[in-house]
Length: 397
Image (cartoon, rainbow, N blue to C red):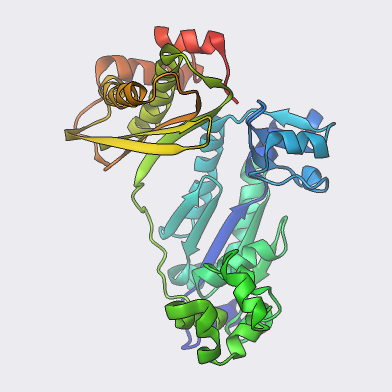
């Protein structure tokens, strides 16, 4: 009965699509707990370990102490002094992510990855084969658990907006389906701030109008809302009714790749900045080559000790995935900034590439050799001289 009912909802005029949103629970922290049984069940924080570090992921045990992602690590340590604090292992998380996405692809080619641990799946064409959207969702959740030892939350609905809210509704290990006839009952009690686009400035204006929940927004007169929502009133009313026509976009091309670091102590030595830039460029270009991409534009991001941020960029005529080429451009941008801001302490430095396209031919010899060795023996097996100097001095958070 469950499979027949799901199929009717998916194929009927009230629905049209079957969308699943999968969100891994406390992904980085959960991977660390899985890999090290000694810290299973303990509060685990993953992120920058220096004084200016930020929490990238907090286990659910840590969240009971009030720790949240994007929180300054010093604040997390104050809230949870006896927790386990770990630096992220991004290459390992990417490897685990690939295994998770293989599970998705066993059910549908329509997979839109949002991050390493989150994706939308359009399973409209798969429900008859696999027995309904809930059957697919349960199979995905169980296969992820069985094949990776990790826990996923699953949201299922007729569109991306509802599926995303559903996956978040009962975390961790959530499993929520929103049928067509249950949309209002699901949305109406939620705070109006759960609507995408209702932020810190808009929500207080709605509160002044007496609109606190999505249900109150849905039933309000449009003209009464315009003072708070302006020309986006109809857009938010559509969301409040659970309407969202955005398609799942499989294989969406990555628009940019970047890496940045906030330093535990501000950098003042240009040579240290150059060494840091070299290290970041190597990380960015390794990821670029792993995706068989090349870039046309190089970006440099700098934040000084007064929190003034600037981003500069330079484009090249022929797309490249060579570390040396991109580093020379980024270093040139850094050099010009240093000429204009002599002796200015630097709090954050980052490098990125955009204008991505399929790489033509193989990578340059040195880059290819480094990638192959590190793929076999692990990141950091080979280190360039300037980067090694930065590694000895430290200072990252």
